[in-house]
Each structure stands twice: as structure tokens, then as C-alpha cells.
Length: 84
Image (tube, rainbow, N blue to C red; front, side, top):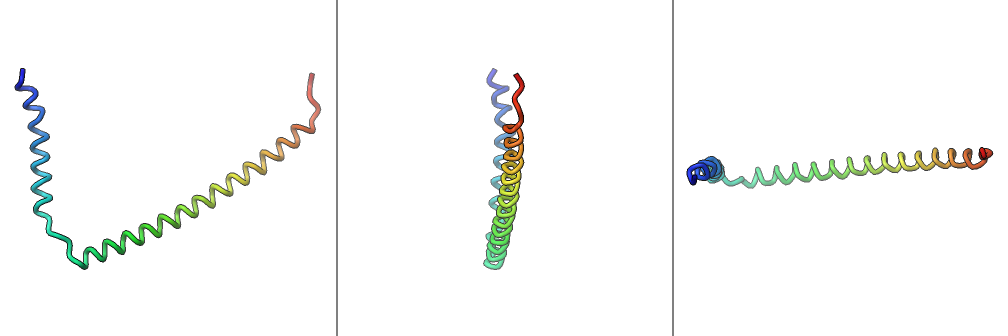
């Protein structure tokens, strides 16, 4: 009965060992690589801000159009005679 539980743990231990060995073999980043990574992160951040600003602008246009169309429909519906 204990054997199946043991065999369920073995793959997990193997994966953890392989990941640990791979991580241990990675060399530390050089100063040049760190600077390049920081520059890339900065560019991604700026692009994300620009994309977010464009998205917000599009949302504002959609909201204003919705309000404009809803206002026109509400005015025409209120002026129409009601059926009894």
C-alpha cells in the first residue's frame, strides 16, 4: 500500500533535482548583461504605458459614443406617444 505513494513522489523529486542542478550551473550576469536587461525592462515599461494610454483613450471614445447614442434614443422614446 505504501509503494504507490512512494512512486508518486519520485517524479517530483527528480524534477526538483534537475531544476536545482540547472539553476546552480548558470553563471552570474555580467554588468553589461544587467545594464541591457534594465534597458529592455525600461523600454517594455514605456511601451506598456503608451499602450495603456491608447486603450484608455479608446475606452473614453466608446463611453462618449454610447452616452451620445443613448441620449438620442431616450429623447426620441420619451417624446413618442405611449400606447394604452
